[in-house]
Length: 392
Image: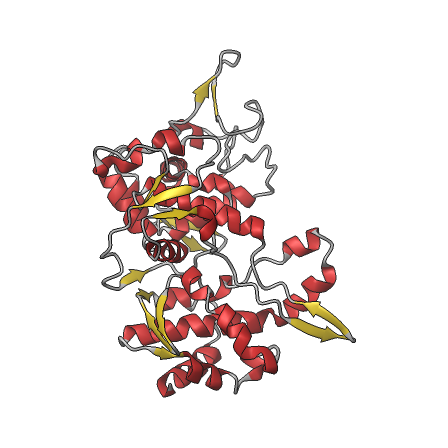
């Protein structure tokens, strides 16, 4: 079950690599919790033991994480924070977990995770190994949002500016009437969230050889791209906005199997931020309609994915006509349904199934792991969608 990444610390793959080494050293094939990812000064195992980015400062007798604002902070690690201090309230550690899960290096179980065979292979050699790059690319191309990013970039000519890519939950600007008052549903990603997600995915693409930051010399040995990009990756801030596109033209000539798409359970953003911004009324109404928002997004992705399995197109006009017959499942405002669903189509790229369009015909460009996509989806919903898809 994959989530959309949106915290900057997860951008450094070498940090994720070090974290995975620590987890394997401590837990092997046994499950671990999210809290276990955090630095623990009381444990003989911690992420610092495997981190090559620690620095020695003249006034301090031990190496420290260079990315913390205060090098003596009890947070200890910019990527995960610590048991003793977590200024991010576990947001960073959750995002690191989601990043490793998205690439298939760990698998979610109960309230924690276990390292996968793919994850063990990823850390079986030093980070500087050429095999690390191959395994990294395979992991990234299994993650739905990364596929969406790469496809959007591949549609450009030779260069891309970071600001050109908008990857997040669609903003539909729907209004519902509540006791005579119009309330706008909060369905989409805020700009700051989009910026963070985009930043991380651009760094991943730069690390793995799909993008070359402007002004950075192209590696002589492309098999060690991830190593020769380290001076840029290690920077405290990633301020470069223009990138040369290095994506192979044939990448989407055959359908990539996206093993870790965004799943049914993760197709809407968290509404906790609304509570933090004192938007309780908007939050309450959005939560009421959240099942419909999730269902309709899932319907679009699932429809494309099922058609892709049969090498068929999806006629979006006919599909929406059939979905509209189930207002309790898919419709917030009947008179606004078609406009909203045109906007919601952006979720397909976020999930990992971009498409080409010719009028109402959508041609899916990837294959999705249907089981992963459907995590949390009610069996009754799947049954209805299968009947509709077979008829359009």
